[in-house]
Length: 201
Image 1: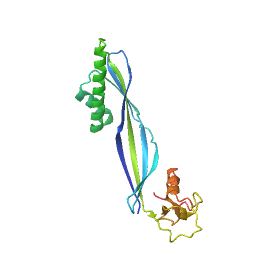
Image 2: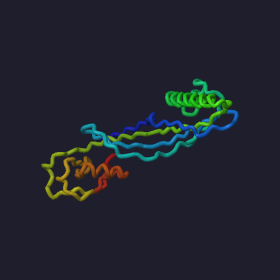
Image 3: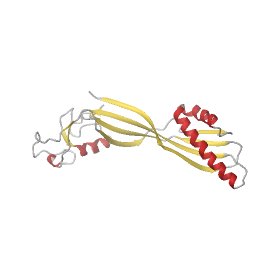
Image 4: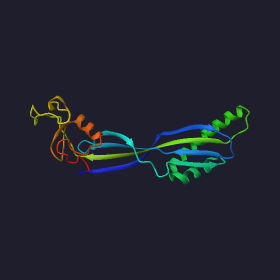
């Protein structure tokens, strides 16, 4: 039986603050950019080992840019303003707190230069990562007793006995080197290289 688990995670290490420029105007301005990516993993149902299949860009949200104008860097006000756009309390709090800290740093730099405080224009990039876990029942067969010495991996055409890690496909019983199969699946193939039976659905 195959199971697919999906969950959306925000990788907080990927929150980046970038001061784009300081510009004259009446209100502070903030642009939030929201790139997205997908990371795919296979979980072997037999031993719970996890293998990464790689990552790729996800489709952008309908409104990838959020543009806000505001007067105050007061933390609660800024949190509420960001939350109205992101609808996520924790993420909104983290972003607004980081913006407040950066604004205080910039304001202290301005005051040390004896310049009048000017409104700030800031840009923040928040990367959203959707992690997809596909659970498959593959029989990992390090033992080679069932293999014929002349059998080869259909992907790399090398001798099966030369590798200690051999995957036995559960749907079709074909055998491949584990590394070769991982590379095959990483290229967005969802089927056995020989018979095209789906690996996971």
